[in-house]
Image (cartoon, rainbow over all chains, first blue to last red; front, side, top):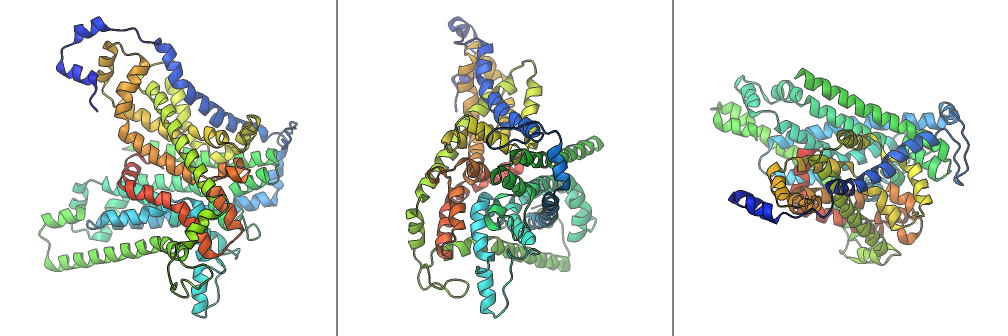
Amino acid sequence: MSLPVRERLASGSGGHEVQRTRRRPVLPRIVSFVIFLAPTLLLFAVFRFLPIVGTAGMSLTDYKITGAWKFTGVANYERLVHDPVFHRSLLISLVYVGLYVPMTLVVALATALLLDRVAFWRGFFRGALFLPYVTSFIFAGIIWSAILGVDGLVNSALGRLHLSAIPFLESTVLVLPSLAMVSCWKGFGYSMLILLAGIKSVPNEVKEAALIDGAGGWQRLRWVILPMLRPTVFFVLVIETIAGFQVFDIIYMMTGGGPVRASYTLVYALYDKGFRSFDFGYASSIGVVIFGIVLVVSLLQRRFVGRREEDG
Amino acid sequence: MSAIGADQMLPVPRDRRRHRDKARVAVVCCLSLLTVGTMAPFVAMVVVALSPAGEPTIPTAWPSRLTLDNVTRAFRMSGMIRWALNSAIVSLVTVVLSLVTSSMAAYAFAKHKFPGRDAIFWAIVATLMIPFQATMIPLFILANDLGWIDSYAGLIVPMIANTNAVFLLRQFIREIPHELFEAAKVDGAGELRMFVLVVVPQLKSIGATLAVFLFLWNWNDFLWPLVIAQSDSMKTLTVGLSTLAGKSPLLPELMGTALVGVIPCLIVFAFLQRYLVESISTTGLR
């Protein structure tokens, strides 16, 4: 885009000429500032800050759908402490994160390392592996329900081989690994790209030096690439942990929190209490817990990355 | 890349080279397997969606013929077109409004000094740590008070504020050479003219990248439309398909609807894959 301004600047003339034709800006600077900032500030204040303060405030009330409420202090939190359903949802979220995060990290790291080793067809492989990331959990949920369901594709194939069906989504034991696997399928492409960029940023000289020293592929990976990749791996861990605690769409779509609340995670509990039971006060206190978890995980990363930078 | 470069540079003993070739074949085999695994669900979706409803299909039998019946029926199904239209309207309007408001604010943050600028900017960045779900109940009450339940305003306005957009655009505008602004100032351009003539033309590539991400986020978004869209005619595609799946029609029909939902994502991906991949690698945009 050629700018008249840039051309004039490049030609080096025009200073005086321009001075003479100078016009007064239509609006004083300070007014235009306000116009520039106002929409964004307003949107963030009303739709980001106000609601999080609102959640904290509402968690101290017994807010009902009618809008009637009274201050109840920490009653909702006391209820959380004694609510076995909440305890279970916290545990289920932790188990889910414990399954999803390592699974995603391993798959993403393995694919990133493999992609780093191919030159030919790399674009194709990278694109194909990344593809699920651009779809929605809802569409992914439809596809995977059809694959893993009781009458799904996998179980039809097993039936044809005269093997008994596997209740991927109907068994309380298998449901969380199945959901974690689907989330991993959909999400690992993002972490793969981040890790691949991290591997690329390991200086070639370092890799070559290791090669000259006679390091084999595995040794190079263990002693050269992985140590230098540590900050990137940590970033991926944090990002995926946060994503894991926020899981909802895929559960709504594939299991509805079941069977018998075996996939009833924290966010699912929030949705259930808030938008099915309309117990807004109590649901808000669950929201505060979710906010607290995400905040702690985020701050952990900041602290760790900050310290590393100081070291370096 | 580097390993290959090193190969060419160094004289490698023959047995070592043979070993290296074997390793390369193994790498390609592993990647091929992983790729097949990743693509299999899509392939299954397409095959089942194109199978005649009610007839045996994969994995028990190859469909006797392929047909678009399921896809056309999906379109004729109640609301499908309306939902897709709603998704398109909501996504596109949100993308445009996000880009306009964010770039204006980003310009103010990047090129002007005013009291509290950095504090306000970092406060906006800090909202990345607020999970959307934790704010949903007050947002819902707010939307209710504003009369926005079951309306486009309710679906769109709360989604306009986007931290990633503000942050990246501000970083980008900071890199625009100061001389351009000085020249425009000498020219007598006011802030508005300066923004339109100097800033906007420089934002083409980052704006396009952001537009793609914002589109995908909004097209794929589920939880907020789920609580806001109450009537059938205000549902977005994700919400509509989730209710449809609950009624569990035949598998081929269901896959036909999934195909309709996935196709826009695939189109975006097909044309802009390189763009998406590069911007994730360089900015960490999620």
